[in-house]
Length: 97
Image (cartoon, rainbow, N blue to C red; front, side, top):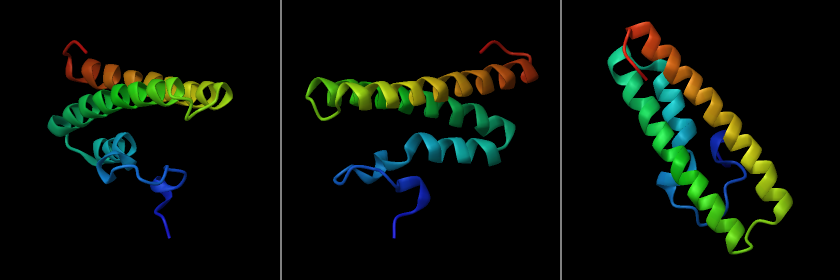
């Protein structure tokens, strides 16, 4: 049975891409201050990769317009949450984002 974070992942998705942003956010939540910022930066980079892959999937008609719009809203919300968390951590440390 698939782990909860791997449900609804397309078959054939490489293991290192299956839950990468979510996995990094879990790590960041439990991380020390010094590693938390690194985890958040890596999650942001992985989210950028995900955006690229979603654009390509839509371009190649693997996602229809409705699916692309739906997942786009979810990814945008995740990006806002991640950005807010990153900003909070930077302010807490007294350093710029």
